[in-house]
Amino acid sequence: MDLLEEGEQWEAVKAWLKENGLAIVGGALLGTLALFGWRWWQSRAESQHLAANVAYEKLLGSFDAGDTEGALKSLDQFRKDFAGSAYAALDAFTIEGVRYNIPFLASLMQHPRWKEGKLSTAFIAEEYPDGFHASKPEGETAKTLAAVAAAMDHVLGERKRKISGQLIGRLVMREKQRLVRLGELEIGLEIMRQEDAIGIRFLSGNRTDTQVHFLHSHWRPGERVWAGTIDGKEISVQVRAILNGFALAWRGIETKAHVYTGSEAALARLMPVKASASSGKRRC
Image 1 (cartoon, one colour):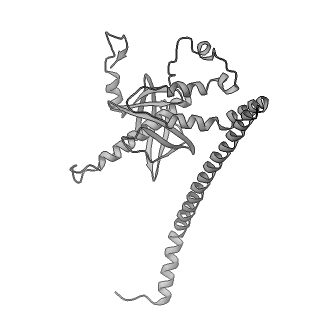
Image 2 (image 1 turned 90 degrees about the vertical axis):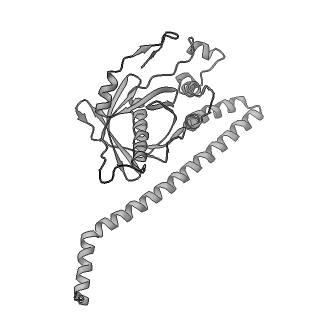
Image 3 (image 1 turned 135 degrees about the horizontal axis):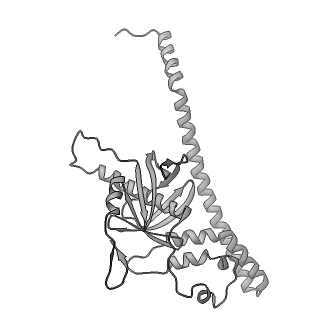
């Protein structure tokens, strides 16, 4: 092969840069933005933690000084400014082997009376006369839990594809569409891997939403908490593996989640619902 002259080499380089330069610059720009975004998030989290500590010390100081009025004002402001931190702490806290009241505490902290500080010793008796029963997911909360369940199922599927001993030369394609059952509620969606994120579009009847929701998490099978972000919003969901699905708990809501393909969902609907003779509870 003849060597190219210097001028021809330069023309080849310019042609290659013209064809690929935009992609290179775009990739470098995205990488830089991601780096600065991560550093900004870390700095923001540290600043919030420091601000909470300062506000808490001020609150304790008012109580110690006997300044009841000032302490109550500080308490009200503290509740307004840092309630989200308490929610996140409860969502991410889990104990193995025993039942606990974290779902109740999470639900309690979202009660309007709790947020307004209108409390009394009769609060629980007045607001929970029949005891606490975990809420069922609905609306945006249901979509959030469905997205988390679908993302975990997708990670499990990717893991299975890496198991050795599978047929060589046979390409396995995962269906994009999934149906997530949260108890008796069904939510359809499309799911796809996009680099380090998982993208989800919800289905509404025969229509697919145009908006893609991006989930980022380092969750691995076996971990008891799914911690990550959905569209940049931090979220922690407690996870427990059950037969063919997950038991999820978040913000006072507890539900069982099962993720199906279209054909699996059709078969699941045919399963009879049985009632336990001892408890009267329905089960499949």
